[in-house]
Image (cartoon, rainbow, N blue to C red; front, side, top):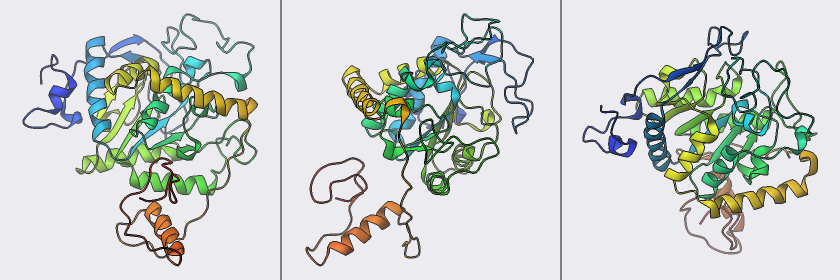
Amino acid sequence: VSTQSTGTELLEMEDDPSPGELTWPEPEMVAKSEEQSRPGYNSTQESASEYLDSPEVLREKVAVLAEMIRQSENCCVYTGAGISTAAGVPDYASKASASMAPHLKGRRGEPLRSIGNGSRLEIGPTKAHLVLAGLERKGLVKHWLQQNHDRLAQKAGFPQARLNEIHGAWGDHKNSVVQMDGALRTDLMTWLLEWEARADMCVAMGTSLCGMNSDRIAMSCAERQATGQGLGLVIINLQPTPWDDRAALRIWGVIDEVLMLLAKQLKIGSKTIGACRRDGEEWWAKHPRCTYHTPRRKAVSYTHLRAHETPEHLVCRLLLEKKKKKKKYGKIIKVCEVNCGGLLGEAGHVI
């Protein structure tokens, strides 16, 4: 396949190859390290060396990513520490002396973190956080599985109802930060399992995929795509991961830069980003110092879950049955993705 073709042209070729069948030149090593990125985890021998795609290849890959997201019905994003380094939040994996990680770039050999003496509770979202909020606002991202504790997703305007802070969060007494040997909150783990089964595509960014329980959503998407189901796994990272060879698309780049290119491809403009920023600022004002206590998700009994019925459809069907005594409704057409007004106008209800 010619590397001169654009991603969109590649997807529209007569043979209709999957992204995993497309070929590009190898990325360039930009920061060498002899250390492992996450020693002691399942990543075993994964190097902390960093790589970048060329600008031309990066543009082509982002075009393919944009088309995959357009085709997806249940796109999930899965993020690790790498998405927040541009805000000054340190990570564990960036170890190369010439690291391209935003919080270390230009600070070679210095042990100081770029957050400096500022409070970690007062930092603002990155460009990538805002783009993801914009993608959700446009209906292109349906769920965010978040490993980080920093609440930058909410500060970017991403709705709490679609955000699973699986490892806990700062300022949250009901979902406090989970230690490495700690237990995940059961209702959030159940939610994770639901999305593991539902997601037709996972975009993993800034995570080493080193064997955390939450990695299962990325792994399952990759495994299903290998059998011809779904769009698979996309990995955006500077460092190698154990799942690179099973990704439908592997992008080597700085996350902010990749997401800004993606925003251009998917027409996430300044108006959308501005609206997300305002929502985020409103959340921030209502929850100073990240204070928000994640309520427990209501348990749903699956005893009467019908064939091919999602948990949302079950909830909506039960709502309708409860209201039938007052008014007769037609059959379920679809689940509302956003609040849309009317008697059954909340997100999760049906029209």
